[in-house]
Length: 89
Image 1: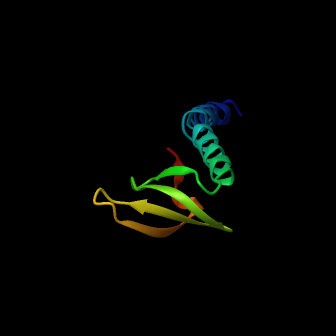
Image 2: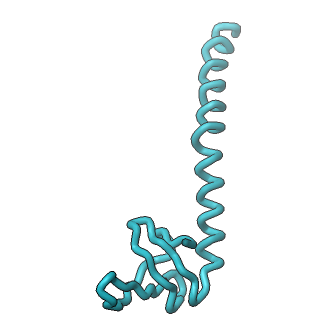
Image 3: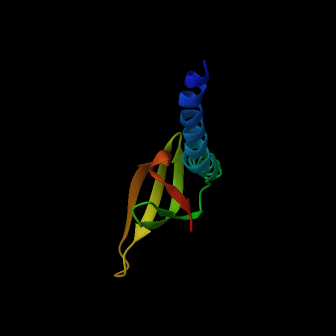
């Protein structure tokens, strides 16, 4: 029985460290991002994970319609899923 405990204890400790350093912080980030996505409203200025700057012009369920513009003054619209990372700017 002591051999089993000496084998399992390091594995359990490794899992505990793994959970504290990787799993727990990532779940906190996911929760915070979900709250940001839920709080999006029309007129909010956002930046996507790909670096596109835009203004929210419409919300349809899990889709966000962004208005983007270029330096030349051209305007366009793009639709993205909320889960693709549109956060406040």
